[in-house]
Image (tube, rainbow, N blue to C red):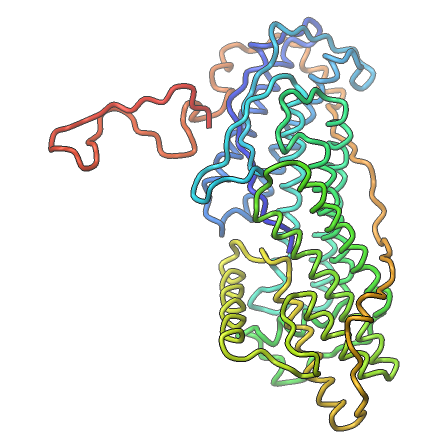
Length: 476
């Protein structure tokens, strides 16, 4: 369900060319080496096929977390702050300049995100923290893909998967909140969408909205039943029907409304940041609608458990309207004709995306929630037509009177990693200059696209024609 962020890439940077330390001479060079590893990992991750990126996320997180302590030590030294009680002196030779690719910026389809140059160590820290937060969100997304495996996970396995994903999302929320606080104090002259405070506030709210929905999903049996029914490899239905335990419906509904509020806040904050990627804006809008539709489903379950089947069906109709799939006001009205074919085609396309492990979940769970609502609507309509025969009230007044949301997660401040005493002491040794040329990262002059070297024939030209392609200042 979490959004499929694209991790940014960066140009090469040698801290030794911009700074020197009298107390810890090896610090700039070691930081350069860690950054070179991080840069290579990000570039290789970008070039991987979608199916292979999930398994590579642990490598990305490891590289970012290894580089961040050195980067923050440089920042502390420039701010005359101690590191683990030890003074680190650092002198700038010239202002640090670096380029990053802004992946949140709206671009023309088929074109890469633009590069943006910035100056100062704060610009570098902002992008590293932003990349780290997005990587944790992607890790949560990779965890949740296991819920749709060919072998349906057990209830204990589901809880374990969702708990791990929630942990990653809350970590992403803490990082984005930390970055939002830093962005208020930094120079805005080189600001991009990723380094703006309102952008990070919006991303923090988005991560919190997704974590709140996972708190509901952990005890919500209906999505699991729907996923099991659509799993071609699952045969448990031949042995026994799926068990649907009673849920704390009213509490879950209020949690879903809190998630909708966070999604709405994220959409508002990112809209104020400028030209944000349309896929992300559409995802946040769908997440808001899906969260409110989930709340309607749980209010309907609460009403049905209380013997109000007609009111429960009205809540389901209201949920379908919020999702944008409403038919008539009468119960049991179904899509027909081209609308039904379009819906079936979207469902099959989403199922194929999940099988491939690529860009699935771009609708923020909208179709998945529709399936759960339709399953309940069909069941309750049959019961109401044969047993209860209750009148179904209009859904609009019910939806208009939904209560306020209720929070479930308590956000914690992000604690950035620091260098331990032994590592810091080892940086007092003289730097090994013979390794400096290999520490900027491999393929330093190559771009993300395939670089043309030497002479090559021009497409469409006369035989024997050639051209030498040179690329100046190409970093990544």
